[in-house]
Image (tube, rainbow, N blue to C red; front, side):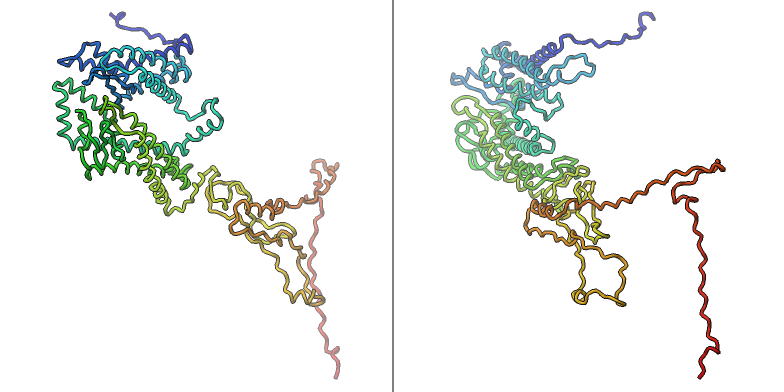
Length: 628
């Protein structure tokens, strides 16, 4: 019993190296691409088969349900479908792509290209190159996509072959490239050497942290998110406002739960499309409801062709709009405020808010950031409008959704007109009471700040101007401030030199009388110093509106050579070294006398003689006095 249940020590697992190297890795990437396509196709197939099995009256057999699932999978990539069993007997296109359904293949391809490029800590798995992984994943996915297109061609809702191939070639390589870029840590460079130098350097600088492109992308992303969020809020409010019409449409489309489940799932994946339509409605251009009608906040023009669907029931009724319709203008106003807020924010993030690099830029740059963010927001709105619309049939149903170029232009106008002034106002408001210049200050420790062209901070690696003061003797210049080595932000100091003191000349009357001689002359304790030519020189006065270069040129012409260096102290005259002293043979234990005069014993000490007091003058005796 013990021998059966007890286990011995486990053998250590030795890593097994995969044979094949890069070829095996590329083959694995090819298999990953095919697997990603199969997973997406399998998810939609399961949903379609569940609805088909639960339907009490299926229209076709399992082959028809599988072809419908394949067509829906291709529709998730943007492929236009063709419906052959229309009421009029003609072929009817179905070109509205559910935007939420697009996320399924995009995420699967992204992961299929990212996983093989992640480094293996144990080193057992070969790692392919980024370019090879993208190509292999794309080829594997396209093989499954082409086979699916060929299989779905015989169904009731068949895909257009050219549209299928075109959208697969557009979506799959982009998602695979994004996956490889994510696996490499989302680097911003270096770019390929095949690009021109100017283009490569410009793109690298444009996407550096804290650059204008980064600020514009951040601003456009925030504005686009506000537009989509505001559109989704409008859809939710309209669904609640038209709750009765939405409920009637949902219940009358199908009487069984399987059909209602299909309608519910279709409505969920079309919610992003409805949000884009609502955002275009708030921007002003609105959206088309058929070829003969357009819904705008002002009114619903024309005769709308509204198919029975819950999301279509929220479209405003015919006639002029009311204040409820006009309130949709809040969405673009919020997007414009978002542009201004993010454009006026510091570029450096938390470090910039703390006063580091990128904390403050010029006001002109702030306005340009807001304008560039508005342009990118308009481009994003146009792309979303083009992807969210399409035909639902022929004749009156041939056009549904917003017009992409009108939506993009309206988004650009709204965000630019509101975003630029708001950004400037916020910039001025944040600078109130701080006395910040138009240029951002340099962070501590860098010494490369941008300041006024006619000023500089002392201690930034430049020689300081000499301080005013008289000469200390001879021709030695006065002592001034030397060259600083520190960095930081200091108060501005003008480049103009301070006025120098001129030697004070004697008054005119003293010069006319001439030098004093005799008893009136007083000996001068110090010799007269010759006037310094540099002290007498007068600095040129620059013009009042001179530029920085003119001021510097004038100072260079006036300054003498090496004027900023301190005076060199005179070198003391060297005295010859005295000969070495010899020791006394009678006293070998005694140290030899030092040859230096300052040493004790080398020079005899001078004894100070006591000061003798002078004899007092003899007092006159009475005998020496003259007699009268």
